[in-house]
Image (tube, rainbow, N blue to C red; front, side):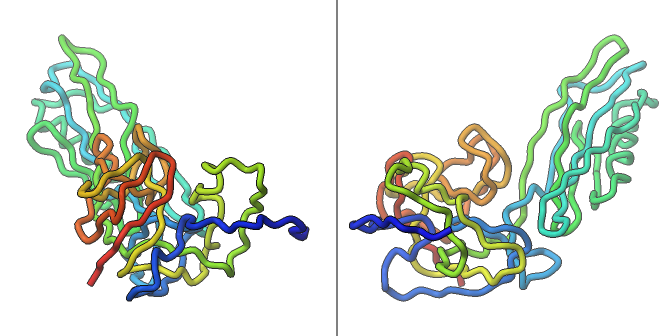
Length: 276
C-alpha cells in the first residue's frame, strides 16, 4: 500500500526525534523485545548488549496484623519473561498455608512456597513482610493474597520496585516502517509513542546524552523530577513511559535527566539525558 497524500506542513516535533543538532551520544543495542520510539530503555541484566522495557524486579508483601491460630493464607505469584521477545506471564496459585506455631514461622512457610515458583530468585520473610526478588530479566508481582479462618485475619498489601539500569531513550528511526498518519488523525494519536516500534532483534538507536522529544504522561514544569514507569498506575500502563511523578510507587526516579521546557498535558516536549 502506497501513501498518496502528504501534508504541506511537516510536524515541528514528534516523539523520538532529536531535540536539536547540538552534541549528542547515541549508542546501539539489540532489542530484546519490541521497542516503541521515545520510551526509556533498560539494559539487559543477563546480556548488557540488549535493551528492553522496565521490569518489576522486587515485590514486597506486607500483612496488616500478625497471623493467628487457624489462619489459612492463599495467593498468586505472577512471573513475566520475554519468550521470543514477547512478554509472557505465568501465574502460580499457591496452596493454602495454615498457621504454624507463630506469625514469623507462618510467614517463612509462605515465603518458601513463593521462592519455589520458577522465575523467583528469592523470597525472604521478616518483620511482617515477605520480600520477593525476581531472577535476571524476569518480572514478578503478587496478587490475590487473602487469609481466612481464625479469630482475625490480616489484610495483605503490595509494593513493587525495580533495580533496572537506565540505558537511555529510544530514538525515532526512519528505517522502521511507520504507522500511516492522515490529516484526519487526531494530534494525540500522532504523538502516540507506541504506534511505531523497533522489532525484536533490531539495533535500537539509544540516546544516552543529548535532547529528545518525548510525550510525558502528564503535564510537566521546569524543575520537575523525571520518572520512568515500570508498573501500571493511575497515570498509565506503558512500561518505559516518562513523567514527573512516582504515581503511587509505579515509577522510579532517574537523576541524570531533566525537562528542558514546560510541556502541556498530551503535548510533546524536550527531555535532556546525560548518562556517563
